[in-house]
Amino acid sequence: MSVPFLNFNKLHHEDFRNRIKERINHIVDTNAFIEGEFNTKFEQEFAKMQKAKHCLLVANGTDALEISLKVYGIKPGDCVGVPGITFYASAEAVVNVGAKPVWIDVDPKTGLICPRSLERMHKQHQIKAVMPVHIYGLPAPMREVNQYCYENGIHIVEDAAQAQGAKYHNGEPIGSFDNLTTFSFYPTKNLSAFGDAGCILTQSDELAHKIVVERNHGRGDDHAMGRNSRCDHIQAAVLHLKLSEIEAQNEARKNVAKLYHENLADTPLGLLPQEYIELSSWHLYPVQLSSLEERKNLSNFLKEHQIGHTPFYERSMAQEGGLKGHSGESQVADNFAGHTLCLPMNPFVSSEDIEYVGNAVRKFFS
Ligand SMILES: *Cc1c(COP(=O)(O)O)cnc(C)c1O
Image (cartoon, rainbow, N blue to C red; front, side, top):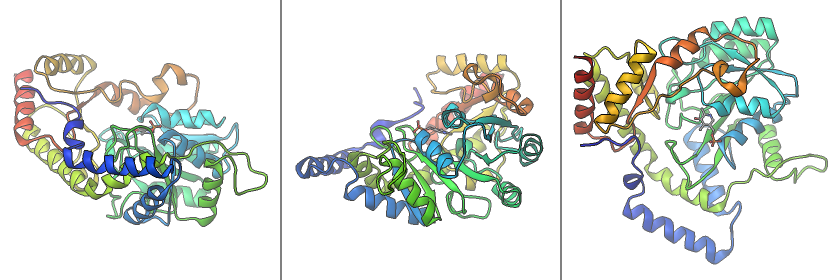
């Protein structure tokens, strides 16, 4: 038996393949390759689903972060708070606009941004913007982050690349606050394209206009310098077609997480707090080990049993070779990164798969 980490064969099932081929044929027949009807349809329906006023498709999730920082007026030399546990691209976007990342420490149980650390780092570095990351699909503590940032004039760019389908603690969908919220539709994300794509959600007409200008070479504004970050029509057609299945798939992920939690409760693995079962989009299913060595040994053991797994994340941002020399707090994040392993998570993990994984974990610890 083997349990794959991802399952593209089931995601792109036969009926889906037939329907997407029809759409692609239609795009080829009508020569509508860039920003076509499916771009508009996706933007309208996705905005409605996430309770945002506007959704603007862009070329990928990293562009979505960079463009968000730019339209908020972040300038070279400005300090931007980035949590120590995230994918490299969050920090990369800050560096790419010439700003300075300041590491914000994280919660030791979840890896989510710590509001107290944000406050301390703002007092030291006068942060202009902060980028809470809904890491693994868990909602960041936005009530505290929003309150502090609104009082102190700090812009918020929420990196929701892993959080399509997640809900804030108030029960509302990710993207429904008056912040810029970015998504990636990279092929491994919950909602995924046939290549690269991303989007930005906003409640502001003014920011939406700036994003539309920025993503298409500054067109629509006489003096603007933009870039090319358009989303291809084929990617939009894929995303729009997948919207009809995404809620059921996210429900299936939640059920997988629930079964893992039950099955693994009697093992020494550190599991995420129960409250996140309902709130997370369960992009990934992380567990905590007691040491770096234990993680390595469990990884080898799972490999022998053909169970897909990945050490997300191997290092905190402050420990990344390409990001050395920046300021901030990273003690909890450094420790958290060394101890995390992600188990197979996708909508098609079965209860038999979970039993097999659970038994392997118990065998490892016995
Ligand atoms: C995937 C991801 C990104 C980057 O998205 P791309 O589409 O690959 O540019 C940014 N932040 C986080 C947290 C991600 O998981």
